Amino acid sequence: MSKPAPEGVSRRTGLGLLAGALAAPSLGQAAARVPAWSTAWASTLQRQAEPPALTGRTVMVKVPLSVGGTSLRVRLSNEYGAKPLRVGAASVVVRGQVLPLSFSGSPTFVLPQAAPAVTDPVPVRCEALDVIEVRLFLPEEAQADSYQRGTAPKGLAISAPGDFTRQTAFTQASEGFLALVGAVEVGSDRRRPGLVIFGDTKSAGQGTWPDFLPALAGGRMAIANRSMYAGLLALAQSPDNGLARLDRDVLTVAGASHVLLFTGNNDLIQPGALGSSGRPMLDPRLTQTVEQLIDAQEQAATRIRAAGLRVIGGTWLPYADVAVEARSGPARTAHSRLRLGQSLHAVGGRLPADGPGRLGGAQPPVT
Image (cartoon, rainbow, N blue to C red; front, side, top):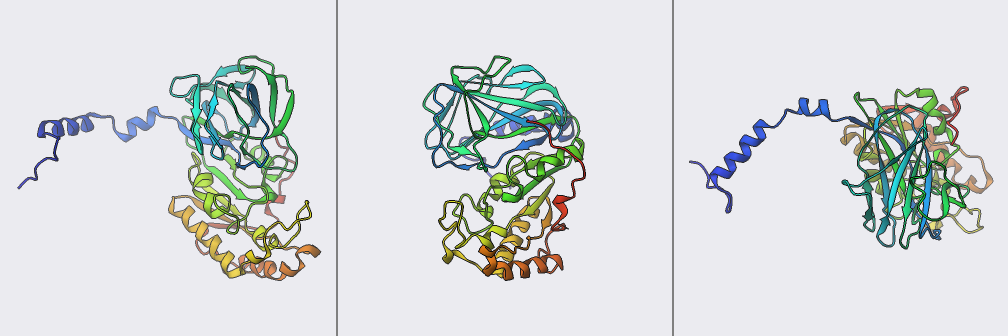
């Protein structure tokens, strides 16, 4: 005996929906028309304590692409914003060609507080190692709340007042930490492997070893660096510790197939250690055992594999610095255990501690 249709849904309506679904193109046909998206570049954003004011100015970020394609789209971020952020105009510059960006067909968009936004795709041919420009005009009250921390304020070119998104040349009036641009995704007619680097200071920001990987990969693998400066795996407050940001920074990366899990050192060395300001980097009472840290890394690997991605486990590095001597014993213990393969049983592979240094003569793109 058939069950009655839900209230408000007639039998005829139900049959119509079913017929429409059956008449729709197959998944294979749809896939043939939809490009395979890869994350050709990514930043790792966090909250900026003293963000520069950007009201009425145009900001520009130079982005080196790890892979090429026939279209691209940009992921913006107001995820740490204190208020909504209005984008008055946006563009990309690819090989000297200025192309306007849109949001669901509109040239303007308001990023809600604590939210990202993705632009419409732009048809344009780009190649691996191309350096493109992403420009945003911010006509109303705005500041760079969501930024990528580094050793120096660079990566975000700030113009004089005005909209410079459509001009070929960009005149920089000041510079700040890279901000607001979270990723650039490239569309292609073929699917390529994608590597996400999930690390800390050793691999975070401009000038670190991941900058050399695109040249080595030669466009055969998309590379998204989601390492956080001074990042921790389990100790930092949400949403900045590794386990808290894993879903946002790794599992949502378009086209990802592999993840290099290369974080955890700072959890051992930062509690009680003095930073450049002379103050403790972390409360010494936050220390955890090596067993707890290994559990945290195994949990990260489990979640990554549950999303269908392969994990490469990077071993923790040994330290001999006087400031961390008290924790060097636990660090060596964990380092040895990972070397022997007694931990991270869920990981799909292991990277030797000196693996990132084996970069040969490759050079990063000039930005």
